[in-house]
Length: 125
Image (cartoon, rainbow, N blue to C red):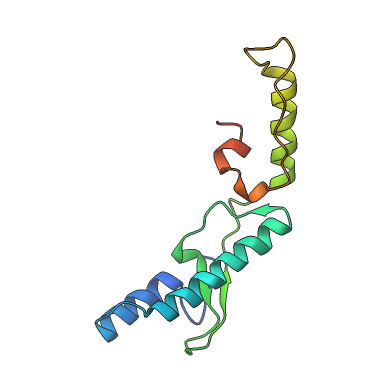
């Protein structure tokens, strides 16, 4: 990691909580963390960015306090969704004719990018 966040990553914080409290996070705490993670991912997708490396270690806290902000880091594997969708549409329309018809199979509408798998967008379907 290029920088050492003051609050540590989510994985370490959860382990410290488990050791210190001898219990997992409460349902309320877990729901708050999940809400933040899903919001961050949705924010990225709305701006055409797919993180592609979502894991506990890639979410860090700004400091050690209980109310510290949770932020996403390590966008090294991220990619532009629209570029992937455009490439996929081009490939489907030019190189993959439908077995049932003589013309290319229709390409599904891609307005809901966040429902497409990373492998499909990479053309490895």
